[in-house]
Length: 395
Image: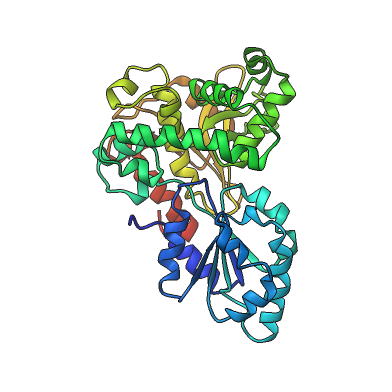
C-alpha cells in the first residue's frame, strides 16, 4: 500500500468528530485507506453498493446501537442518502453516553458540495476530507516516478500497473464505468456517447478557457446543457474549473474559467495516449503537464487559501495564483522544460499584482534563483513549500 498524506488528517478528525467523510472519485483508494485505518480500531465495514450490507441496515438505529463501541465504515453513502438523518440521532444519543467521537467513517464518490447537501443534518457532527489521486509527494522522489505518474495519472491501480498497456486499459475501463453506471446515478439522464464526446473535447482543450457555446455547437446541444454536463463532471471530481482572478487594477481581465480533466492519466486515456513517446509528440503535452502540476499543488493547498489564474487582454498571465488567508499572494508559473523559462507576460502579471513570492515550477529537480524576484523549483519542492506554509514552518 502506498502511504497516503490524508491518513494523518483522517486520524485527527476521528479524534475530534463523531463522523468523518472521506470524499474522492471512484477507485482513488478510499476503501483501501479506510480499511487500513480501521484495522487499528476494530472497525466494521459496510459496502452500501452490496445488497446484503444494505439489508443489515433495515433497522439502522438498532444496528448502530449494537455496534456503538466500534468504528463503522460506510462505503458509497450516496446509495442510502436518507441514512444521514438517522446518523444525526445516533450520534446525538452517543454523545449523551460519552461516546461522541470516532463513530463513523463515511466514503463517497461525489463532491463535497453534493455530500453536504445530503448531510446538512450532520452540521457540527462531521468533518470533510478530500482524497485526491496520488500526488508527487506520495511517490518516490525520482524523475522517472514523476513521469510515470504524469502519464498514467494518480489512480493507484493505473499508476502501479505492470506496464503502460495495462495502465491504459484500466483507465479506459474506468471511463466506461463512469459513463455507463456512475453518471446516471448522480445526474440527469445524459446519453453516454454525448458525455464521452464532451469529456474527450475537454481533454483536447486541457487548460484552455471554457467556451460552452463552442462546445455546444460541436455536440449539437444547448450552451445550458454543456454547462450542466460540466457541472456534473466537476461534482464527480473528474473535471476542475479554475476561476480567473479579479481585481480592480485598471486592466481588462479574462472572465471565463479554465477547464482541466483533473487526472492527467484520464486525459491521456481519452486522447488515446499510452506512452511517454506518444504524449511528447502530442499538441496537448504542455497543458497536460500544467494540469498535472496544478492538481499536485492544489492537493496540498493551505487551508482557507484560494486558487486562481490571472490573465489580461494585453497578454499578462500567471498559471496559478494562490491567495492565502492573510491576503498575501504567491504567483506560480508552470513549465514542462527541465529548466525554468518564462515570457514577458509573466513579468507583466507580477508588476500588476505584486505577489510576495513568485515561482517557476519546472520538470527538473533543481531549485535555484531564476531572477531577483522569481525562484525556479521542482514540482515536489513546490508542493512541500506549500505544505510547510500551511503548517507554519520556516520556508
